[in-house]
Length: 182
Image (cartoon, rainbow, N blue to C red):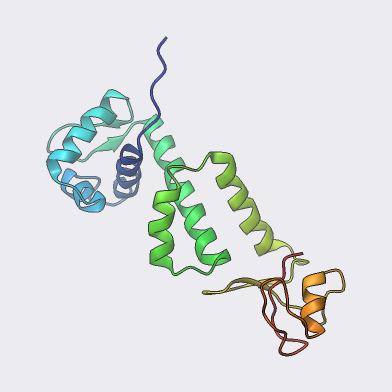
């Protein structure tokens, strides 16, 4: 039995667009897919024939495109990767949402699932663990915030004592927010 080649990034983008559009009342029409992906309708039709041959979509001209059960699973996984990466870029690194979304779209095609899973686990850990003392700040990445300095964090202690931290920032006040990489 011959194994299928992995999906190309473009094919993944089509599946993700169809997955999103199919959930709307109007469905996933060729013109909406073309607009979403940023290509001509003829390009979408060629891609739909390829995806149909791979049994990921059901395509009948002039009808909304539907995903097969397998196509729905693959589309949901692609969408999930995109959402995970966007969330990490926005919530953990403080990147503006539109830039994070565009960047996630590029990253999702090249990152192995186990790496994306680590991004998810890290974001979930930071969000739910009461002992991390990490808050997220747009444009700054993450910073540790302590009511008192954490004596186990050498970087914070050095900064609190008026020295440079590992990034060369001078401490300004004992209780201000400081970068912390323990």
